[in-house]
Image (cartoon, rainbow, N blue to C red):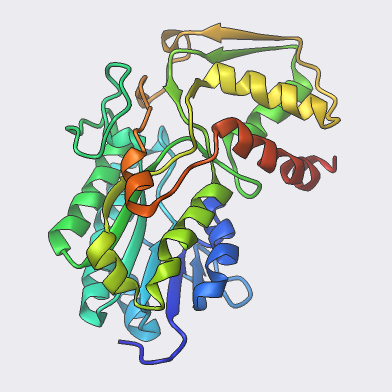
Length: 313
């Protein structure tokens, strides 16, 4: 176990949407050692499909806390690359937990609404039966199960529809399409909660703030699986309408004149998506005295820096 007075935090996936925000939010909590797929500056390279590389890095760094903000997230491509998706999403989290246990450390891991089958319209609670529809969901569930089997101190945050200023995401794609096309046809029967990467990063730091450096002790008492997303819910079509309206209010010139709602059957994809991605986050609110912002408020906060960064507005 790292004996430094300053806790050591190993942050995986720092160049991704959530990881990029976590670099900022976790900085006050300890010394950050960051990894990405490619080495850049002081960030170390780490391939989560390489179990030996994971073990070597964790033993070298000897962190007090591991925050895993990386994953295989190409939902459709996962249907063609199930072994790679399983290695990154399913096997790696178990290895991280095993190595953390050797050090007396803790792990924070992010999972997804895709572990459920999307039936009904009631928000899912943590104890509901899982039933992933595709490879991505099955491999993310396998990661949760691998961590649970390893035991030790950890927390898993299941979230949904993540977007942010950094990285590739739905919001950026919609703005690009809306600037180029007069009409958009968007699925209207898949419902969930758009969740900003900044919110997830701030939430994570807030959950860990009371640890006083003893992250393992905190998560031993208050860990487990929690649902964590912004408040409210909306369809992809409704989300698109809000993105376009808000971007226009902020001064972006968009070509789109019509946003047509369509059923999922008119937009077939290699991987089946859950129709009901609503997550009940009340357990997180009770355990951590936490109130999430509405998805609209999070979008309002994210769009100004996103427009400036991506479109110079």
